Image 1 (cartoon, rainbow, N blue to C red):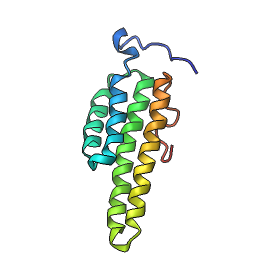
Image 2 (cartoon, one colour):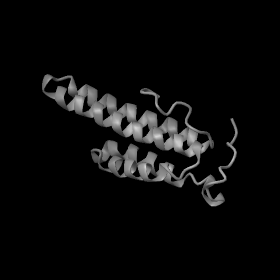
Image 3 (cartoon, rainbow, N blue to C red):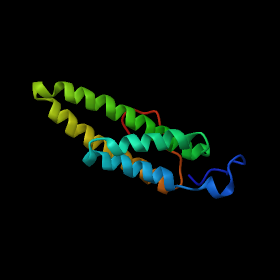
Length: 123
């Protein structure tokens, strides 16, 4: 798949600006170490940037926003299950899932392609 056609409503300088989506992916990955703080910053950037982005970049922002909320949901479930013992395993699995999901999104972004399934639960 090649680059999509430019959106006439977006200035040409922003058509292929991948900087903010790359930053959001990096913030999500860094949240594994920071306990989620950087992910909150990333989702705020994604929400703000999504409305003015061309369609192919908007798919990445949607994917990043969904990644944040799913990570939060699964992390809360893991924290609730921690006293039972399985919660630690769930939290580790969520961290691995988050990193893999962001690396897949980053790979697609750097190829200049929209994310194919931004609403998917898995990848």
